[in-house]
Length: 93
Image (cartoon, rainbow, N blue to C red; front, side, top):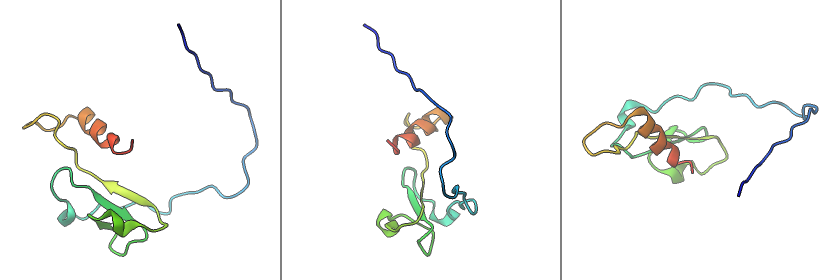
């Protein structure tokens, strides 16, 4: 048994409207807010303080961001770059 898939592309015109661009680079959270490993920080452009530990404070129409520290995969050992990317990436799925 086999399975195949294909994506067919064709040239077209650019759609009408403006292309979205970011006005500035988002700033990381202040060091005093960085908490324990595994405790995420939430940020949004519409929040007066920018970053908090409570996601409900960012229920607005602006862009959102999340800052997480990797959780150790092996007890007592710092996570490798691959393990950190995999565990943080899991939060998006």
